[in-house]
Amino acid sequence: MYGAELIVADRWFPSSKICSNCGYKKESLSLSERVFDCEQCSFVCDRDLNASLNLASLAVSSTVSAWGVDSADTATLKQEISFKFAHE
Image (cartoon, rainbow, N blue to C red; front, side, top):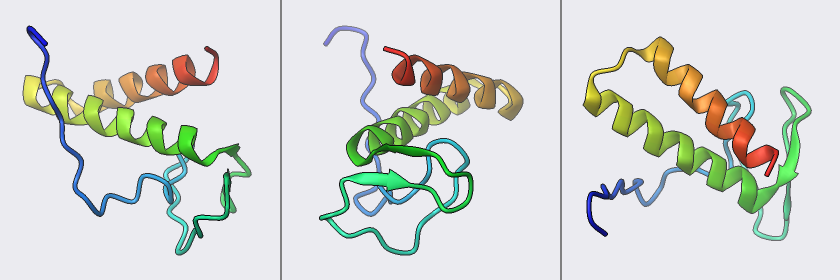
């Protein structure tokens, strides 16, 4: 794609185990568990949607850091992405 930038997540990035709402990381999550249920903030979401929100957030933070935007602005962008995915 013209003008696109590819962000590659580490192979072992725990996108399915991290709560996209609060950042809490589950110790274990079996493949048979299709719904992510956060023990910390009670957020409930489809496992794959939760993982995609985490990967989108990772991409935004990587891209924003490369552009030199400060971390406070990064947090705002992450919230905007999370809101867009949750309400589409």
